[in-house]
Structure formats: C-alpha cells, structure tokens
Length: 91
Image (cartoon, rainbow, N blue to C red; front, side):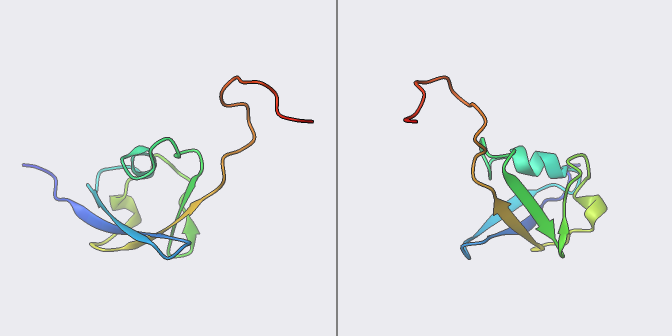
C-alpha cells in the first residue's frame, strides 16, 4: 500500500506560503532537496516549533509533523564561495 501523504505549510519570511506534499518517511534532507528548494538545499533552514531542523537524516514522521504543520523556511543568501568560474569582479 502506498504511504499516506502529509501536506505541510512552508512559511517564508516574506509571509508567502507554499504547500508541500510529503510522505512521513521522507527525511528533512529530502524535503530540502525536493521540488520546493531546487538548487538551494545548502541555503535553506527549516524551523519547526522553534527548533532548527539540523539533521537531514531525520524522518518527518520522527518529528511528529501533522497534516498542515507549519515549517518556517529561512533561505540564506548564496555564500560567496566560488560557484562558477568567471572573470574576477572589479577590485
């Protein structure tokens, strides 16, 4: 039988909200790498009930997330790490 799906509310600092359809067996890391934060998984911080979700291996079921639980999403700006080679900027 297919695993039931949960709908989570992803709430952003700019007061926008998106619904994420996930499975309880999905991990925090899978949520970050999923369709909701493409290419931004290194920058996204998920906060649930005031707790920063640091463990990407933690299952969503283990967090006791319920249907329509709110996850606060904080996207940090891309770090200044060298991403793509290119001409150096003005000095």
